[in-house]
Length: 315
Length: 291
Figure 1: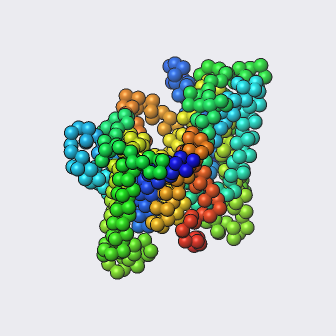
Figure 2: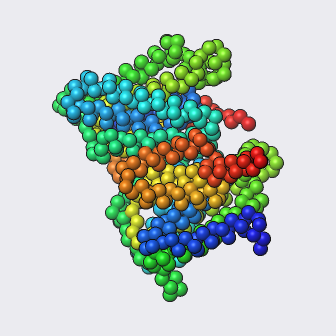
């Protein structure tokens, strides 16, 4: 293993940060926030494959997240399916759903794509809210711990380590995807779809693939989130939640896996820090979205790296 | 039977008129700048909230309405100046995120300036329902139809008969050419935001006595206005109006005959259907993407 390459070096750094962070945790609240930050980070790493690398916006991603959560809730609580089975089954259903809608949706561009993904997200939200017989309606539903092979994941601390491992895994998977021919094809699609087609890239297949992958990421995180929280409401599928996820990706940096991760962590921690000024939260979130896009449209991490590079070149 | 149908039709036309105004707002900004303004619904909210709170505080309604309209226009102009103009050359995704950011910002500000409660206005001319062939029509619905019709007529006049309106139309067809014949494109962009904020505010004010308003009221109204605009063909004014009416009527019929819980889903089901099968909408130009 060569630690000098960006890939393994970054992964090692990530693992070290996750391992060492608990040294600064004084109680289980910190673990709880840490788990949520990492949940969002996994989600955003997946979403970034779609938005950042393939250049396709999705304003309905919270819908896939919620389907994973509700799939797990309904299967484990009402049908007694084991947690891991429910997670895999939900993810497969979400994957199939994403596959079915991907082709017509990804033919659209720009505003139209935004509108279509938004529409799907809102329809999922309304279904979850309305079908009270299955989902518990606006009151939500509760579900039990995540049990697997006679082993139960519970408590903020244990969740922290499990999520940490999953985050490293998710980043590793995404890095591999991006470095593979698939990743090169995706970037070609982002650069110029027509150009990519001309050199023989089957653009629509790749776009479908990345759409499905990011939806499955969201679904898996949704399942885990549901078990960790023990309680879910249709709010997790709201338009606002989808927008929050997109903001995390663009704040950290589109087309940068670590950027998306950093964006997710910052925006998860922000409300904790801002608890004192809670009534300004929406305004601050809105200002961050506008400010990032106006002053550093590439996002935090890529802009930072670029300015470092410039400084080095200047010497 | 027929009375029930008529009743649904009235309620559909009332909300449809508001979606049409919102859709027109989208069309005006899209034409001038190729920006889809996700904060369009917030203009509607600001119009309604500002008027309702001023009236509640004792300001006479004939004064509150123009003040609220002016406030919305100011917000629209500020948004163009401080959020859209600095990112003029950014790509579509970037602009979408900026306008969503602006809408969240405005919602947060509304929550601070006013509150999270629902507000209403007294109906403009009483609440005695008018009986029409077994159905009832609220006088406020007539106000909604009337004012929407007047607003649409004025817009038509503005775009077809005034120099500045024609300059705006020219900019929408070809920005460079418009610049060459001396159109101040920057002013046109500002005006388009002011105008669509004004339209939104008008819609918000006339509909508040019927639907109430609160700081979040703009989200759904805006999204349905967007559906109306896409259904009619983005950038086509007549299309936006017809699209708005179709969305409003479909919604009212669905909630009457099918299930009221899924009323809000109708607009989005229509829009997915339109996007999948006729992406340029009912009246849009058959689009060809340039390489």
